[in-house]
Image 1 (tube, one colour):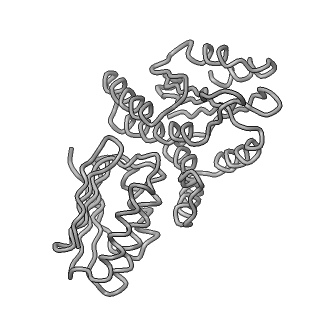
Image 2 (cartoon, rainbow over the protein chains, first blue to last red):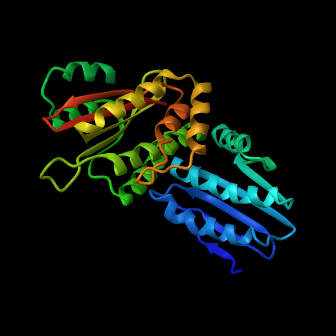
Length: 126
Length: 188
């Protein structure tokens, strides 16, 4: 599978998906007007990856801002990862948030409560 | 303050220019009127960050205002209507100082009359719920698979209410037989 490498813009995050290493990373701002357009290729990639994942998938989410239209797409991303986890593969989601960003921590906890997949909340010092 | 403006204008026929002049009269940090494009949204968001950083505002407050501004600007982008026979939409977006060291984000836009009741119903529902209930509603809507035809998740206003921790003030001014002018204000 080809990896995904997308540079970040002022409205979309930097994305790095690599099937060889099992590293899935989304970082920056995710506030596009049409988030389905941006996330569909990512969800499709994960769909294919879930057929033959590496032994351990590490997911790093470091978002500074995300809009509510992205929040549904991010849930779709997590649901694909949940499928991998349910097939007894090792998956962990590291949810990074900046120091004192309670809204971002709460957003991570919202996902954690919806999904059956290990989450790690990681506070970053500024 | 904003409530007073609404009451004052309530009995008059709606005039955008007058309404806008009243709202931006005092304490305005940033104001914009006109159609809202994707680029306009990016520029307004950048300006908000610059203005609030210049005021040495706390990063937590800047984040909240930024997040809420994203949602309400994108609501203008997706859901405002242009008046019959007009090419361009007329929208307003204002950030101003508000009482008790708070800020107010205010928007105004025209909507077709047939949208009014559903919109009002949703706003009333959101205003009726406390923060715990908003959290529950947010997760229910997040976890249902439906997207509206415009790609919005139906989550925007719930998120605004959750993050601001305050009630939404809104009004609908009758413009003509087919359109209303919808004003929205939230304190942060």
